[in-house]
Image (cartoon, rainbow, N blue to C red; front, side, top):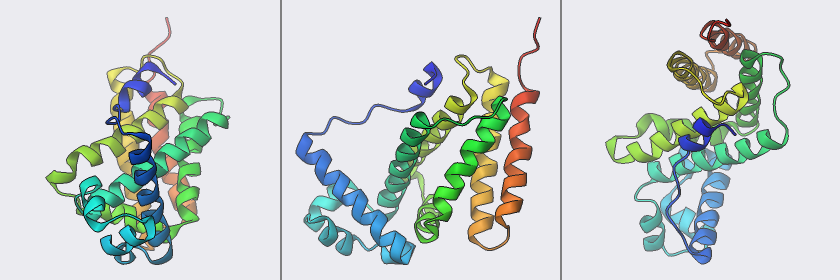
Length: 205
């Protein structure tokens, strides 16, 4: 992982082993409910029951359903990042590797369309109170892209390209979930925007 990728992921608040296990159960329950019924199926009382925690305890971890689903997306991205470290993309250029990485992420979400819809809706509905959690999702996505690029010191222009790529990926996910774009079109859009990486690469001496 590049230094920038490491810096992109904030340190998690220290939790005891028991607290971390409880948090894992909550996130698992949230993902399971969302996978079965989407955004509307994730009700805080049902999540608490499925996770085996008191409702008040759940709210101490996650103040709202939006906080919970955004945290669920962060958790899904962390799992993806771990998988990508074990099986990195194989493209010759940075643009090819990033496109492959984002399409692998997209296909993972495609396998769980209800969960994907719930997480994206939560990001869309998030207000300022959820800004830290939304920013963490963005930083996690940035870290995944920087790892695929394999650059120790991306330039400001390359980081700008990464932000545009993130926006495009998010937009493509929304249009696919709403039935306004096919997987083939998403792939074309992702590959097109990833070419920005090569265009912003520093000129060789």
